Amino acid sequence: KTLTVAVWYPTEARPAPHHYGGPTDGTVAVDAPPLLPKAGGYSLLVFSHGYGGGGLSSVFFTEQLAARGWVVAAPDHQDKFSAARIRTGQNPDFDRRGYIEDARSIADHGPDQRGKFLYRLDEMQATLDFMLDAAPFRDAIDASRVAVGGHSFGGFTALGLCGTIKERHDPRIKAVLLFSTGAGGFLFRENELAQVRMPAMLFLGQREEQQMRGDKTMTQIVRKIYGALSAPKYFLEVEGAGHFSFNNTFSDNRMAQMLSGTPDEFDVIRRYSVAFLEKH
Image (cartoon, rainbow, N blue to C red; front, side, top):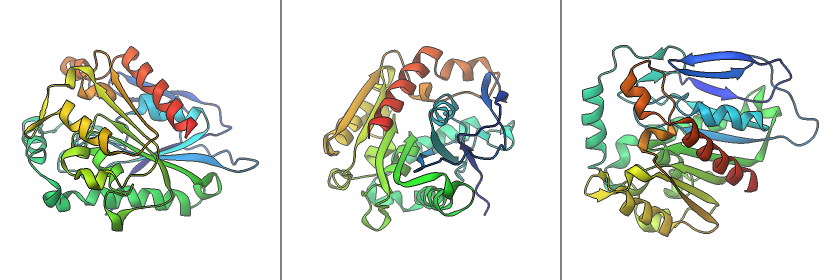
């Protein structure tokens, strides 16, 4: 299979306005050569989107992190349902009902049933290996400064490489950033989460507190994750935010835009995420 990955990185080329899709715009120099650092290398973040999303889902954050001197790689996971893809944009045939039903069924799984979802770990590992091994990025990145992150199902994906599954642990990873992840709780046991021995930051939207994932509320799941993780660790609840406030939207549909994050929510998420990553 071909794995498509969006990569943001420092360059000397002049940036220009870029339309990602729907109401989402940015400023990048598309396909420009990376600026090779004179000494050392850039930090790397590999970021995993939520179920049904795509590699561009959190561009409000990934683009700005690269502007501060990071390389950020975000793959399009091969999920059963995908609302938007990196190369083709919004999926006009997206089966919203099927997506909702499948997402609910995932929440009924536990650690013993996570095997069917390990393809996501394979894809994240392949992305990390490629970024550190292949030109031109291998010459721009400091392999000792690697972080992973993810939103929702992407939190499960990221945690899967951070020590929760012994045979999947990648010791090159030094920090993990988690945006509103239920799957990061119900697909791992507490003793597995306790094996994540690196700086971690966990976000939750205020409006999610009592939302259910399987038989647990998001508050219960977040307490499980945060309680098990090792220090240093940070938790931030974003006032007024919901589960999809961590996503841009690529649709002009008014309902999709209402579910997406607001500029103020994006600002809070971005500032604290950058501060955490730059500190650790």
